[in-house]
Amino acid sequence: MTSLAEENYLKAIYKLHEKTGTIVSTSALADSLSVSAASITDFVKKIALKKLITYEKSKGVKLTEKGRQIAINIIRKHRLWEVWLVTKLDFKWDEVHEIAEQLEHVVSDELIEQLDRHLGYPKADPHGDLIPDAKGQFAKSNSKPLINCTVGYKGKLIGVAEHSNSFLQYLTKSNLKLGDEIAVVAIEDYDCSFEVTINNKEKKLLSKEVVKNLLVAEI
Amino acid sequence: MTSLAEENYLKAIYKLHEKTGTIVSTSALADSLSVSAASITDFVKKIALKKLITYEKSKGVKLTEKGRQIAINIIRKHRLWEVWLVTKLDFKWDEVHEIAEQLEHVVSDELIEQLDRHLGYPKADPHGDLIPDAKGQFAKSNSKPLINCTVGYKGKLIGVAEHSNSFLQYLTKSNLKLGDEIAVVAIEDYDCSFEVTINNKEKKLLSKEVVKNLLVAEI
DNA sequence: ATAGATAATTAGGCTTACCTAATTAAATTT
DNA sequence: AAATTTAATTAGGTAAGCCTAATTATCTAT
Image 1 (cartoon, chains in turn cyan, blue, green, brown):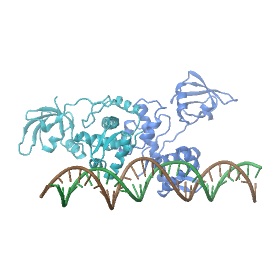
Image 2 (spheres, chains in turn brown, cyan, yellow, blue; image 1 turned 60 degrees about the vertical axis):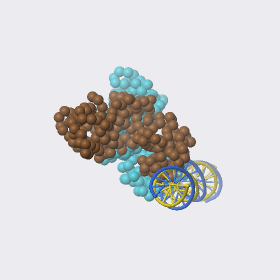
Image 3 (cartoon, chains in turn orange, blue, brown, green; image 1 turned 120 degrees about the vertical axis):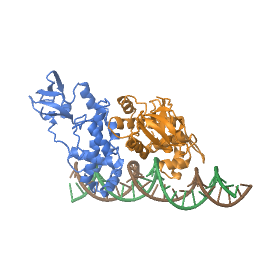
Image 4 (cartoon, protein in one colour; image 1 turned 120 degrees about the horizontal axis):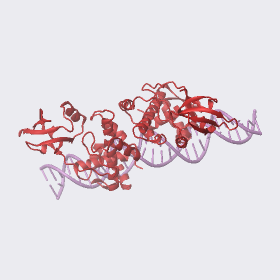
């Protein structure tokens, strides 16, 4: 069996690897889990023995295929629960993370299968993150950060690259939501801010920080 | 905060007290939690210091009002989740207990409030057990064991006094479910078995063991 | 290439929630 | 009431998951 702590370590390793593309360092993990570096070293040795990760002393860790499957399953559960919270219980997209962090650890394959069915086999969570299927397979995504687009580009907002409550709340306040059509009208060279129109109507100025974190795709 | 172990101890004490009406003994708790008596004594002292229970050495324990509120809240959550599992995810009434045991520990008042609303504020769980409201208040029940009824009695099956999977599965197999109308046709003196009709149609013979565990109420 | 800074590890401890074995208290039998 | 059985407690110990402080490795800058 996989303990709560193990699940959280594996998930953190998965996410850090996804972000950096490299082997995951002790300090990055310590940071992400809010646990001392010494504790990380300890724990990491233990789960390496269980073949959930490979551990290179003073280098860092990597998930094994076994560890990766567990991590992906936790992420699958987390995202399905988030969909449920938003679509069935009317939570806002900035209110679901903490609750899903608890629900993701509930153990029952039957439950998750039924939940998935109940939700109509959603492809993405409320933040646009893809939901892997029961076999751990992700759909292919063709999203890119809006900041990589040029004047004249027209696409749909399908995700966010930053999940902080403050960013999500900023978007809500700005009346920007997933599915909105975004057209790039102009880009200011000096500060990299974008002038865009939303759904062919509303004109908006978006700062570089914001544009970096908006993920768009062809319509 | 209340730990997982604390929640389980309080719930067990609540249920044992409900069943026996008396102060709860160390051995009864040990039995119900599958933990050694020595561990019970230890733990019970700790939560007595937190004023969740009162502990009389060598006598047993009782919930304080604070402990009782926590226990009732866990039971409320458990039963709401069971309703959700059956009504929204199509689980059978004998499949929900273990999953609800996990879900009941998820911490979020908002979540439970929204879940309650989503379910339409159910009064009882799939086994007919009453669901306390957010203030810990139970509705009044006028149910009684079928075994206390006499020939000619007509009532509705509204609950079960025994929750084992084998009993629930027996009822399912016998095509008996909550809401069914039961009329007592005859009672065999010798073995206390009941001859009944279900929904004014099907005739059935129910053993004393079964009749003891069926809860009925006036229609 | 070496000094200094940064990152990782080791050593030793703590808390929670459990355990067994030994002892004491309470209940039951004779 | 004494003897026996049963229940409860005490004493001492364990594993998991964390901690701090001290040490060692690795990286960076001169």
